[in-house]
Image (cartoon, one colour):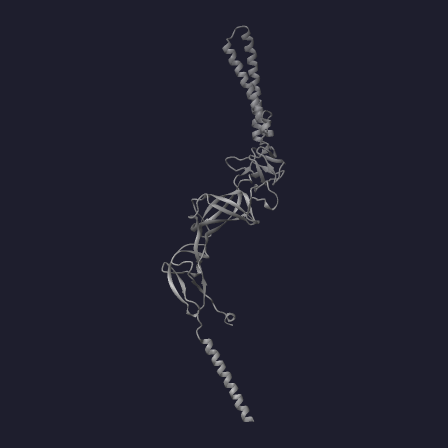
Length: 388
């Protein structure tokens, strides 16, 4: 009995070794390569690029004072709509002491000259009435008197302007009232009551009282890489997607491409501008209502929004296409492997093809294959799960 048991154990051990050997031998045998297979498809092909930028009003102006002083009152705030000529703020003039003294001295001198001219005219009038002087001489003296009176008026106006910022003769055009120069939306009021402001002159830009823009005329401003700028022409359509309004798209038309590159992060880029059309695209439908200050809620575009512009650089209708991964690039030429046969008898014919437009995923085949051919793709990598 013990003899049979030992024989059984030895046979069992031998069987295990033989089974392991067969398993390892089978695993070591080369497995046939399996490839993806593609059938050419006829479809519209587009090559697009995305340009990052932001939305800005085309006409944005900084309203500055015509006189230096202190902000006494602010009538408007950011977000208010204003008409051209509407008052935004009022400035209280703090006169320069040197200019004030000079203006006061000019008034006194003008009054002295006017008094002397009046005395001369009275004397000339007596002589003229008696016929002792000619009319021409009398008219000259009267002209001097009139000029002296005008000088008094001008000196007085100058004194009032230096002291108060406005004179009686031009009170309707007071320089102490800061008025909007355009019709639009107030984007920013960077000053507060009590702030000192200065007028714009040769030496400085002056203090900005408010920034006003027409939000019904917007542009997209962005930069495009030099490798793609050659495909752009003015008038090309674009679609704008704003980061804060992801459910909406806006049509735009390319208006401007900079003739000069600007280096950014080691790459040459060109500035472009596009007019945002006054309609929005939501769920494939276009709405003709204005996009700017007249809108409320989530659909209102605000100045400075980050945006992306989708531009179609090239397009082919009804092109014969295959996945670009099926293309072999070799020595400046392109090849594909056309499948011949089925099952285990598959053969692959290496065939030269002429390619066209590529969108980065699919590529146009101009010649070399037909839509009836089957094309070999990349090799399918096997894993333990696929083997099982």
